[in-house]
Image (cartoon, rainbow, N blue to C red; front, side, top):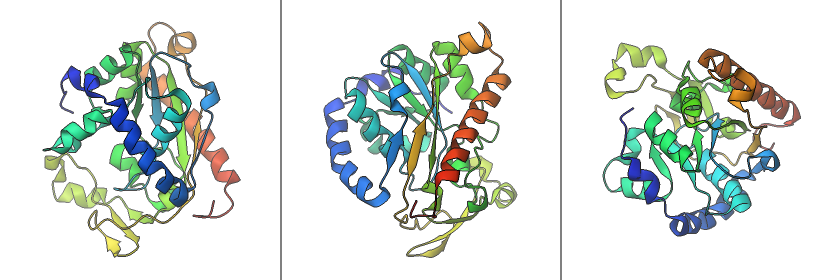
Length: 266
């Protein structure tokens, strides 16, 4: 992705972010009945890279749920930055995004934010993960993307794996449509999927129009931080770290799936 200005981190507006989170939290709490577990083990200070799965298609609630729980625990003096696709910074919404702590997804931006003592939230699987089929809803799949490992190594910060369950039950995800996207040459527009979903109120949807997410209960688990140098040495192998992070996440997601009694209801 294209790198953005390093000053994006300085544009974070704690007061503005608090107002938005305070306004959205009650709605999200009633609709998704969300729970965030495991923050007791989160590093008390300093930079950390949260690596998470992404769920819910276009209308993903992940960031709001993480932010609400994070700021409740650590306050707004400790920024939570989220890496976002270039498309999120088009036109007048760009300023809104950076005030909320959303920064362009690039290694340089992420490292700068982490070295400043900020916490960075990244979804390596991106929309590929967010549109995973319902039949594979509890599978961690980053589509081979490992840049997050190099980011953590370069910044010298721990990786904190986190997983959520429930978001992929917000509608029926039928296919990512990777074969059709390839046939249509959508890679020209930096997209490798053309997903088909079914939901309410529009029924079948190919990205647009976006259906209203069902009121599915979402549970998030933040796992123990991984000290890369302590576990993998001074020069960690990217593939080894990636395999370990995904294994930790898959084990946590499997536990949440085993505890879940009913779809949507939780």
